[in-house]
Length: 93
Image (cartoon, rainbow, N blue to C red; front, side, top):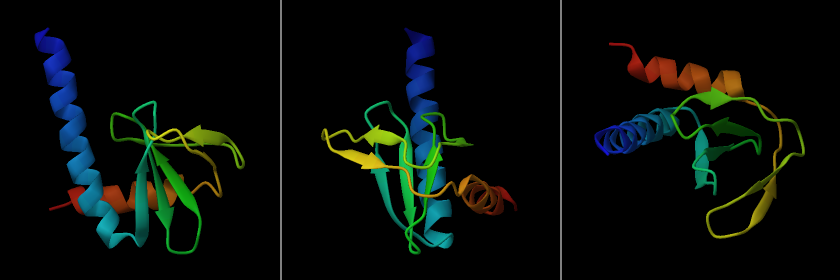
């Protein structure tokens, strides 16, 4: 029970950290997915994925994702390095 609460708390912290980093990275919109991950849409139309633990990860171009409200979207681009750099830049003192 305590472990579950810790995991939930950490995921909320990661979400807050990533949201701040994204403001500086040219992210236009972030969409929560049904599996707990987040897809970030850049201003140039490309996307980057962040898993439910706050880590960027790769997805194949065209792979379908389901949002929390039941909509489907297709992956466009794979900007994992762009998202990773933005997150690292935010964490540096």
